[in-house]
Image 1 (cartoon, rainbow, N blue to C red):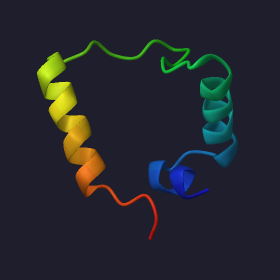
Image 2 (image 1 turned 30 degrees about the vertical axis):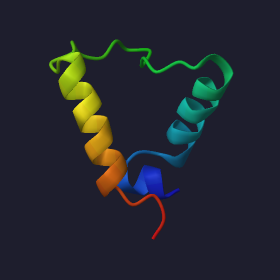
Image 3 (image 1 turned 90 degrees about the vertical axis):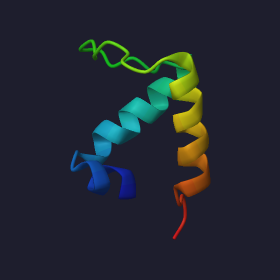
Length: 58
């Protein structure tokens, strides 16, 4: 529920995406998405930064 509130989307939409990911490790949205703008190095650095600075539980 917190994810849907933060993203301002329906709870069911988040649930459907999470279930799809669990089943087939699908990360691409059905409607396409956008091109990648970060290099592989930038992507790794961003992931590290987010893991260090994002609170998953309050």
